[in-house]
Amino acid sequence: MSRVRVSEVVRPEILAASPYAVADARGLVKLDAMEAPTGLPPALLKAWQDWVAEADWHRYPDGGAQAVKAGLRRQFAIADSLGLLLGNGSDEIIQMLCLALARPDACLMTPEPGFAIFRAAATTAGMGYHPLALDPEDFSLDPQRAVAAIEREKPALVFVANPNNPTGNRFPRETLLALAEATPGLVVIDEAYFPHSREHCLDLAGRPDNVAVMRTLSKAGMAGLRLGWLVAAPEWVDALERVRMPYNINVFTQLATRFALAHPDWWQNLAASLREQRLRLHQALEAIPGLRVWPSEANFLLVRVREASAVHAAMKEAGVLVKCLHGQHPALTDCLRLTVGSEAENTRLLEALTAALNRR
Image (cartoon, rainbow, N blue to C red; front, side, top):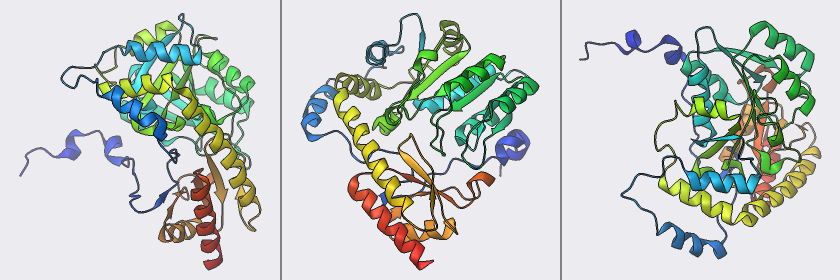
């Protein structure tokens, strides 16, 4: 028997937190995690296999991932004057930011309901956490109230997911700039869903100098790669490099990212197809009595149905897995988040949802 009790050593706020849960989706139509419905097209698969055959398994990867950074700069027109940080998914970058900025009494602020990892990373780093409340009707952010909260709490770090997860809406550029003006620390605009949105804010990175923009390949059809990046003024990236673990981007992620950036048509066409499917799915959901669906600029839709937990369970029983958000936040009462899939998957979703509602 151990002579040391875990509860006496691990910080109490860590023990009180819930691990990030991933649902078992085996045998189900998986529409709960905003993944793409398809992978590489057959025409590119052979080329990728030839590419990966050159991997040096026995060597550490390029610690700076310089070829990946060069490809990202070319693809997204990132100026050489800006810093570029890579992470094992955007989650690692969020964690690095919290670790670097977690001075005593430092706090993180972000709109809620929002991405759960922001709160989890703040807790892990020992930062305070103060949400910025969204309007429960349309999930908009009142800039005057948000600025007043920021001026009161003086956060070291503000995250704004744009579009927001799980609500799908964007915040106006003017609001983002107002937040940056009021924030004494760093404002990070998280554009994880950039392939599915009509507008982008990459041009705001470093202008003003306390604004950074974060992106990932996950929602561009490459969730398995775990590649995220942050664009910011060089002094911010220089500071964050000091908490980045060595070789955090593995050999295969570097190879796959370079391959994807060399063949952008397939993931750009995939995103265009999902935007079309999002419109079709939204229109079909609007026609269902008793269901509310919100507009979205991401690859998912947020809906409210009566007895959402029971509907979620019935859909899963019918072979379709979506995300039940009921109980996570008061504004998400009786809400489900539906990932936009292929035409066939969306048809299955609508059939399962309709059957669940009729059964209820």
